[in-house]
Length: 352
Image 1 (spheres, rainbow, N blue to C red):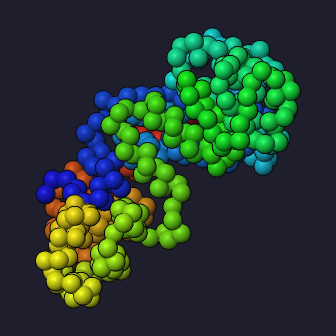
Image 2 (cartoon, rainbow, N blue to C red):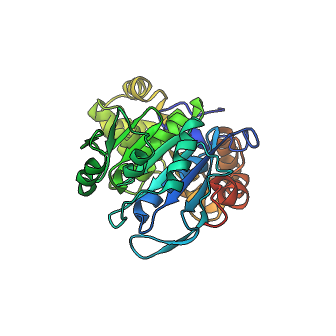
């Protein structure tokens, strides 16, 4: 058993063999330019999507920096100040530049910001604006011939300054390496679109997982309906729910089939058709997915994790976990919390 077989692989693909690409990733440099009274929620939404991309470890590492026109502390819309580097056109080189506006940001032309955005665009970088920051892309002449998104409160003002441009009511717009979004909520979708454009091709399947992390369904627990096909037989839904409810004390497959009211053979055929795995294999992968979550998100001992996910002995858990994730449980935890999950793979700027 050397990889996930079932539909659960979409939740785990980024966590498998997390050190295999160390030192061989594509580095993508992303700069956030913070305007006075920028939307803190918008910034954190966009930045957290990038950080989650680093955490689940595709082929791309996003290195994040923060800038402002004056440098130093920049006050957000809720009064929380954040540190930033002083913006300068000389030596400024990033794969993407995201200008973060907000409800309280006063819009006025900035020659320095205009030069930086033009320089980034000329170098084939992505230029983006959040909330009402489409104003600055327009001021740099980067929105000619295309729609832009901005907060409804700012659309009339931007249209007054730039009547030749066409604002739209969509939450975000991305095309020709220009991106704009209207609010904090749409900053996630815009950032994911940027990541699909900038990241390695093999990262594409991770974008859906990032969205699942940041826009979860009401239950905080692992829910197999998150990965179920849209149309699935009721008996199979019942079987999956039984598995979810019995992670710590797994049921026998025959017992599940009896609860569902079908034969074991019928249950196996439905698992194979809809979930690409036999029932016992899917059940094992479900339990190991829960184990991965507990290892990354809690400080429970690995023995406790093993027991909480239905393994009667730690050696058995150790082998199964290593088979699927490519690392022993302790090494897996150390990697995320001692090596790279901190400053390494999150790669946040030191001043943030």
